[in-house]
Amino acid sequence: MAIWTQRASIPWRQNIGFYERRYEILRDLEQKGLLRRFQDRPHQLAMRLQAAHQLVTFGADGLFFAALKPDSDLDVVRAAVEVVWEALAPEPQGLPLFNFQWLTPCGRPYDEARDVAAKAFVGSDHPARVTDFAVVLDGKFDEPFDDFHLAAGVVEAAETPGRLARGLSRGENERDVPPGIWSVEDLPAVAVFCQVEVDRISLEPGDIVEDAFSALESARDSADALRTSILTPLRDKKL
Image (cartoon, rainbow, N blue to C red):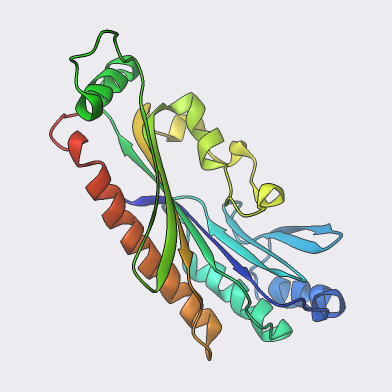
């Protein structure tokens, strides 16, 4: 199943060049045909690129970027990030953070899918009937990644936009996006939702943008392998 959303946050050392060059960056993005709209915040610029689901936000302390639909053109996001990086020449600091979300459609009605999924994980020999379930895990990867957080469960279309709109856990409330980006009609009626968030220990010196997007791809592969492994009990349940 194709990934649904991808997000990344890269902190950097306080960069006062942001205040001096942010409008220059906007003009450059507009001239390149990359900018759709922007919001000027006290310490950030939040931008939507060629489509509403292609996002870049940057400020004095770091960068956030996202591709929030399966057909998002990540090259557009990368081109915008390269413009920001070239203008500010920031010094990365702290742990980059990556977040991925998947939706795997189910062929069963919502209540039935939840019941089957719950039994797959906890069995049926219990004094009470399990009507819902969620898998929530924290753990560690081997280097170059570090901590991960996984959350998974069965969702119906009406609740899915709210889940997809959730941003990264590290102070990302202002970078969440309106659930209206996703139309309920375009979402699976019932699906297994899975979100994996991954810390990267550091980025390599040199071409930081290249390393950031390589790290995104590598983190995505690791997160998908984890998702596939953790959700193995659902594999033969024909949800």
